[in-house]
Length: 562
Figure (cartoon, rainbow, N blue to C red):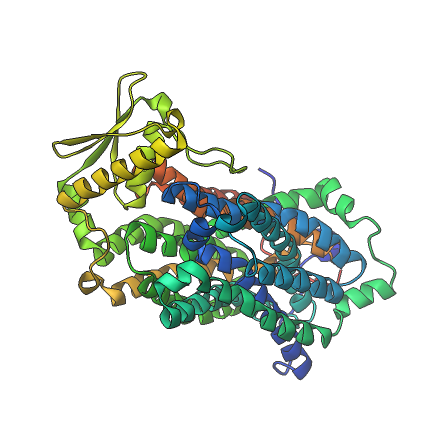
């Protein structure tokens, strides 16, 4: 393994004797403007994922519910896939032109794209063009967020005094959580005021449309910001890089740091999206908690845990970044399986009992079963095996797999009841609709007769325990995530910092973290185990801890002006 060493110009410098009299007015303005704008960008970005089931029905109406949800999550993930390209584009602009104006470009792209989603016609109105335009808007959002985080981290860090960089930049880490909170709050208010049916029909547009007001606030605040003094000093001294991309990724001394930063970003990225998004999907889609209650639980847990991002950023100034971050990732990875199983117990005990007493089996030729994950969205997953599994997943039912005879259609066994599945590809559209309705009805009835609840009983949903479990996960995320921006900024020299930081961060968090909901749902659909999808974030997180334990050096105290 490669042990990372900092260049001579970036060696750790003593900082304990640097006097500083608290937060100045200018520093407060910089942190506030950066954080408010980034909160709004995360609100825009996460809103789509938080309302994915509704999006699936509006824009992917030609598929079954579970496949529609997977396609909606794939549209959500499309923005994550393109985030690294945004990091390259805006990272280069930020290193060449400056941090401030790059900020303005990203917020405008994000805000206008989000507003446009609220105006889009649905699949029922314009057919296949609807999801195509929707994905185009998500790609623009991904480009924008690819330039946002690195800019915010660099901008605040370069305004921070030595010895307090972890504390000051940790405020950036609250923005993702607050953005999730704000998006869930917008959906919560819309659902409460207009009702579930209106939300599904048309009111889902309102949280997207409201973003235009948030955009105006953010642009106003960012116009008042001053350019980074570290960047201005570098520019005045003529130390700017003429080719920050090739210098950052074409020279091994920088590239090896980028690689380790990428692995680290993947580790905390999968924890972030598991604790803040997949928990919501799991509670609503699998455990069948009503959306109002699930949103409230996640919102409160995020709100309660948010101060700890700052607390652990502060702690990293005292004891170091590396040990805090890796401890958080490791503990969160260990906690996922027991926490999600406890959520089932406290959210839907009837489902837990039914799984134990009335196991369900899918009998199918393994060759007939696909892994329901497709980045292009072109696969329909219409085989008899896929139809059977998709139906069970939509009902939140765990099942076992049993190999069937080669070439024979799949079936579902529930107790002594066996229900043959259907192969939609072999039927006309009209017959497919009729047989699918009959199959769905038969499975739903058999599942209900076996004791599986169609939804969680509100009287049996233990909200305080679910809140405690969700809070614990976000707390562990705060341990891992609070010191991250300070560490990433300190890894790279000023001349290529924006580019070098942004790409590995968005590769890791976007391509691994952002894919958690999609991959986890597909893994559950393939295996039948409602917890199996957790293996993806757990494996990535533990791999990241192992690599960074050996390869990542402590950065606290680094002179970032070099």
